[in-house]
Length: 409
Image (tube, rainbow, N blue to C red; front, side, top):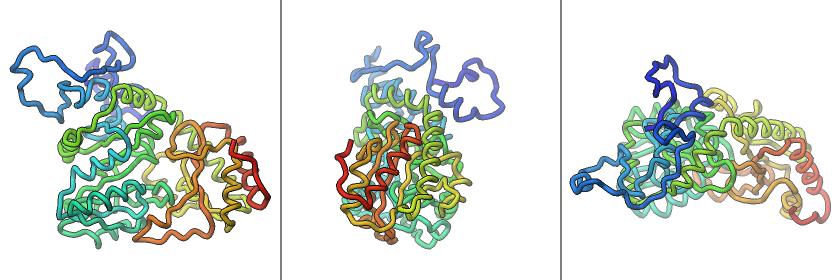
């Protein structure tokens, strides 16, 4: 098992290393690989055993034995250990993408006849899985107001199997009071699952907030370069075995090359996120002042309704937020979006580049209403110079009241 240098020298540590130190050292063991800084890529399907006895011996998959390629390799385990160390988890397991990480977490704790509470602001494909797959399995899915906080206690039942959180919501950015939700759920012995992709393992310690299972789309900030699909589920000790067993039973497997790329991305997560946050704050504050903008949905802003919770629970913010414009028609909105030169129109986020999509959250909401006063767009602020991004947005906003715009560049 890879570990920090101080542990390898058998020197006592008086305090947990800071996140930047963990990013640089967790999941590395140069002495195990001829001094190589990075854990090599181990590609394999078959693992040769020295005897029939060792081949047939019972294996505890939760201890991550190197026994077959689908179960993971030292490359896989190095990535998983680094994420677990950063989040303060008992263990972590990689999955092929973020949605599969959500699916694994839910299936690990739920069984037919149970009741599941899901925040109304959840990632829409996660809602789709709940409605199209869990409900036919005999699991009742109930969506709740993301702002409910301790009031979640009124929705808990004797058969409630889990509470699923996402803070902030990835389209409408409501902050959830996860500690209050966790206190209420734990009083009834109910686990709390949270999608922490937006805040990342670098800016949050989910297990300190009361989360039992933490979920990330490593495709986004962990990978960081828009060229990787991977998910990761971290757990406390209580839920580690069922999560790991579920990954095994559903035959999820992640390429060691992808784990290597994710681990490499993790090494620079801190410096990238600090720049994403700095750029996003500059652009968001500028947008707040523009006459075409009604409001900016970004918990890191002092004026955001969720700012106090964000400041209490998180160490920073990512580069993703939404903007509600003042009322304009669809043609004007298209002129604004299509003419932008530095903002790509595309799914996902967390890469080095800036992105824009139009927010269509209303059809997904069932427990609460999403009725913005004008159209909304979601921006991912990348690593470009914010002055250039602002100039691009300014010429885009000018087109809201202009004629035809050039094609997207």
